Length: 207
Ligand SMILES: Nc1ncnc2c1ncn2[C@@H]1O[C@H](COP(=O)(O)OP(=O)(O)OP(=O)(O)O)[C@@H](O)[C@H]1O
Ligand SMILES: O=P(O)(O)OC[C@H]1O[C@H](OP(=O)(O)OP(=O)(O)O)[C@H](O)[C@@H]1O
Image 1: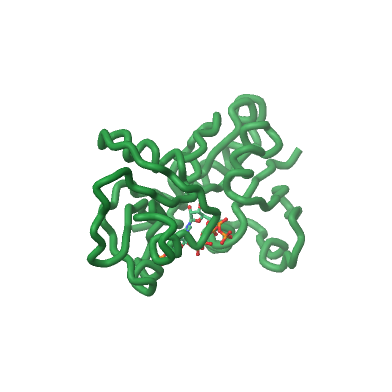
Image 2: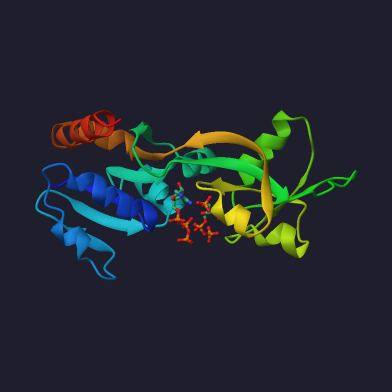
């Protein structure tokens, strides 16, 4: 049985393909996949899903290995082996708000896709806030008056800047991660070890 690898759709998938290409694997079918959600290569079975779903598929043993953002691991805490960081998808988690914003004296309203990360961040500060869950374009919330601030991913800072927001605090650094199903690592050790070791070598042989 070929190892099954779940990839996070979108930017991480593209960066993974570039990373994997540097190793001696046949990745042509991945590059030319169109709208297909499953791709077979000579050595692997790949499928593509949203980050939190990749974690769910790996946790349940549908995929042996998965590539997800570190943000998803922090937010969803799936029961998987967190093998090692991959050399792409580097970002930070930040609290941000409007430039020159006067925070209210009463309970703050914070919008985020990452409600658990937001809850932990404010809990550690000993502050109680109202958290508003959004699915994307979180930067709109302070601008439109839905929230006082946001907790979101920052990479280049362009999205914040172009929307008149500024970072108040940066508190988590992360990158993409390789994760594995706990039983697969034991039962399929022979077929998984070579690819895990190859990816590890690829990840650590860089600057
Ligand atoms: N600006 C960014 N730069 C680098 N990595 C990012 C950035 N935004 C998100 N990521 C990482 O990529 C992963 C997937 O994010 P991506 O934006 O591709 O999918 P998404 O969050 O499901 O958004 P969408 O619904 O727009 O596809 C995130 O979990 C995070 O680890
Ligand atoms: O610092 P930057 O380089 O500008 O990147 C940060 C932006 O990237 C992500 O959004 P994404 O593009 O995934 O869109 P989304 O708002 O729909 O999640 C994130 O949520 C920020 O909005």
